[in-house]
Image 1 (cartoon, one colour):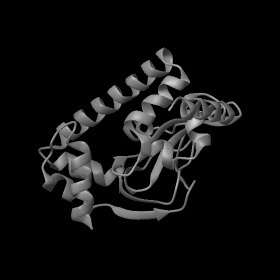
Image 2: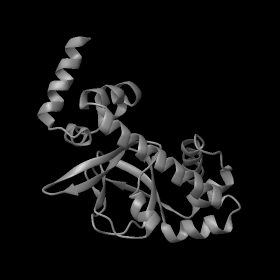
Image 3: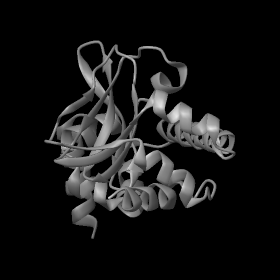
Image 4: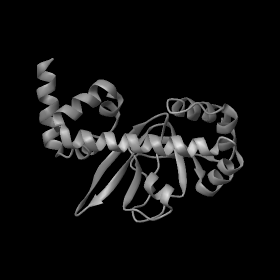
Length: 196
């Protein structure tokens, strides 16, 4: 199973930088596989992230407490990384909660173990550099999208480029991610289906 997990992590990360499989195997051998049910809280809000996670099968996201409810700030599916990266990188507690959206199997490695591996590997520096660059680019893109596009435009973009999110993630989280109510999302979906 470790080799399969290593290969999946490598494939997911290769779009940023192609690290050797041996690097990913070292990480896979130092972690564990976790299975959990839908809407399982993997990391509670106002705590410090202790793990880097990779979703093998399932989906999850990041929720941020805002006044009287959680707002979804990130949604990911199989073969993607899922952690409270702000907390993981700064080693500080954050208001973010990491949650699964469906039955999920994921790999996780403790931050301290990850540090040991990356510090002893000639590839460790490149791993951290490309990982943080990718996170920055992704978050900046999301910010630009929320400022310059309507909820309908973002929904259509997700439908085009990540249809699995629409098919598998509960609508309340998608609506939250779009910054609208579930009722508004239903109207967008109805309008879009009548246009087809």
